[in-house]
Amino acid sequence: MKCKKGYKLKDGKCVKTNPRSKNNKTNSNTLWIIVTIFGILIIAGIVFYGGKAGWFRSLTVVEDTDLINYLNLPETISTTCSLSISPNSIWVGDRTTGTIVDGKNKLCHVYVLQDGDWLSAYQGYTDSNGVLTDTRTMNLPGDYIFRAICDLNEDNRVDTGDCLTNQAELTVIPRPDEGICTETDGGNVITVPGITTFDGMGYMDVCVATDSRVVHEYWCEGDTLQEGNFMCPTGSTCFQTRSGAYCLAPHIWNVGDVVSSESGSGTMPESGGVGFEFHDLMDFEVVLGGERRLGAKIYTNWNYVDPDMCFGMVQQEGMEWMFTDSDSVEWHVVDLFPQAHSVDLCPLNWDGTNLWFLDFWKTQNILGCDITYNWDVEIYVCE
Image (cartoon, rainbow, N blue to C red; front, side, top):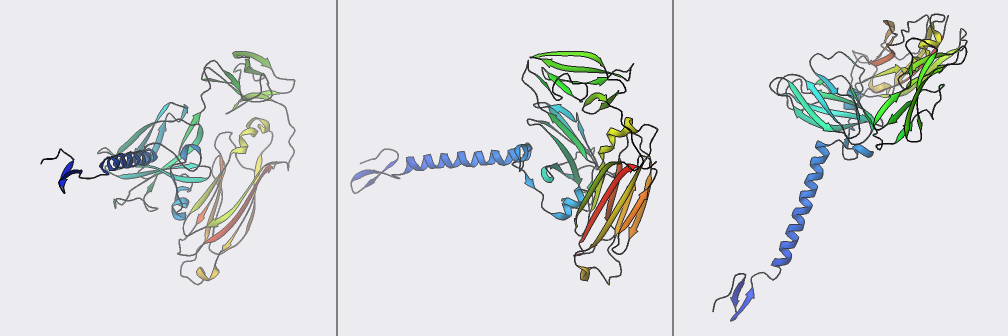
């Protein structure tokens, strides 16, 4: 007696060789689908930007404090590696290209800063010409900062001893529905800077080049775009900002008036540095003009988290502070021991373009020697 395929002879009867063969096949296929989907998710986490919030929900948040402090270092002139993004301002759904330049066949790891956290975004190798490029379609809006670390010592990994590139910024602008008109300033309001978006194009309010008292305004009437020139109120002038132009009312500034105040504090581990940019000065380019000069009152202090880990060593752990205006370094001090500073710098140079900076970092990197710091900068009309 012979049995058909899938059956065998047992006790004179043909029985299935595996009564669960059909179910097993189904389970096997199901497992393959799950594994395949999981694999796709993993690949998506590498190929497409993701993370803890929205767009970046699939990426890993960097938790290594040494690496975080390294990525937070102030902008410096790189010795070998660089990072660029072009174009660096796109609509949602458009493509942009990131380019890393370093030595040939170098491993580079790209990180992105979002909501105060650095996220690990991508890694790859430069080609024989020392170039690594990657083009992406960006599908969610936001402002992002990218930075890369390239394998300087060629040990096939990246760490804080490798080459840190410059920061590269990317802005992804929401794309409105076709035929829809939207505004950022609430309409035809000449005293508020604004951008009007129509059919996917942005129209920024601008100052008329031939007359500093006239603003060219864009606004919506229903779902149609309107534009026109408007004279500023008596005594006001048109002031151009990165968010549009508007009529700026005159303001009488007196010596001693505070223009901007910023402060910060934190703990700095075994290595690191911090830099702060004073963006609030942008609005005072026209207001102050040549009639008033700005100054800065700087207060700093720091101390050891655990003095027993830092005192009594040949090389003391310390802090280096530096304040720069639009022209040059105006204050620079190195503390070998904890101390406080109170500095009044007047006058300083504000050229309306180059930002002011407060930078500070540790002078030595001693294992286990963490420090705490506090700073406050008050920018005021000093003369």
